[in-house]
Length: 456
Image 1 (tube, rainbow, N blue to C red):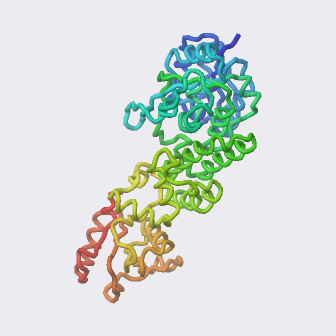
Image 2 (image 1 turned 90 degrees about the vertical axis):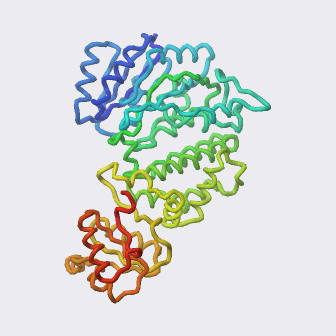
Image 3 (image 1 turned 45 degrees about the vertical axis):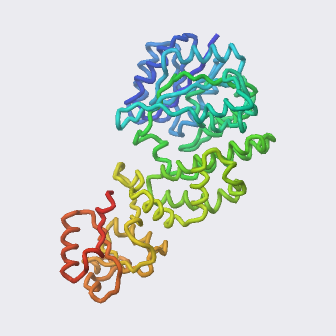
């Protein structure tokens, strides 16, 4: 009998695939099958898989055109013969006794799902971190009751907190195959956030779940080319996932049971989701969607602060729903004196966010520079109404004006009343020359703000 089917979606993962495959092949539980689904890789991932398959008869390789990890996992599930299903991403790896220990836990307690704990590896810093599970444990322990971790259902937890004790990913879980097939859930064909619906719905439908405190898996994060790190290309996916979950909970007649847990998770997720957007356009779209589309559906603000497990999450959500995106950015810069991570040049392809915290609102501003940064800043300042009056200048104003941009000569500065001149030029030498020219024209240094002051 095959005890566990391990399903591995693979897409351009040759750098990490060797460690991943060795961690599965080296499991102390030997009665397993390893189903690898190549999702149209263009690197040497398929060659790595073929070599492992030649060495281990438990491995079968399936191939498909690039359709993302969710479709690849569904493909693998259709070929699975194991009593339980395990899913591993090609850049992660198991501890050697993970499957044996989790299989034994499932069999001993006759549960539908077993969950374990995990470590995170920050790949860019070569550093291991371990999440704080005190918050999770609070949903098992309480003054009135203590829920056994080895066998429980969602309704037994404090606040039915299934959405708090686990994230919506599959690689730290073992699922009973006949339970999954009876429920009929599949992964979504999304570029990112493809696993949340599958995982959360199975947890809410499970009659019995088991939770193990052991750390059995290492999950790599901060990989620059992973699909989860490029989610802004399809920024709607996070919203789609939660709306699908809400509809299915309602159809199953269990939304009221899980509503508090669900709303807390939606708000917590959206706080992370917004800040994870690496492009300004996606950032502003996510922000607008939270205000204009999400709240009318979930009505999270109908509940008071005490309804939420972490007050800061509720306060964040309340702020987003009361401020424009420009006001929010301005408030955050003013509060922290810093810029969010994706503005620091950690990726090559990016847009630019104006450093609102450097200026007061409702002032007269002259923006110097019509290059890439200047154009991005001008669009944001113009559309947000952040400043009372905006004048745009560049020494090559004639070239830019010929393309339809409303750029004027810098000599106009001598005739203008303004509160600040913002030099939107990246090159420090050029920036210094412009600053010197402005001072020579009588502009007070305390009225000059420069791009490099925002530490991008």
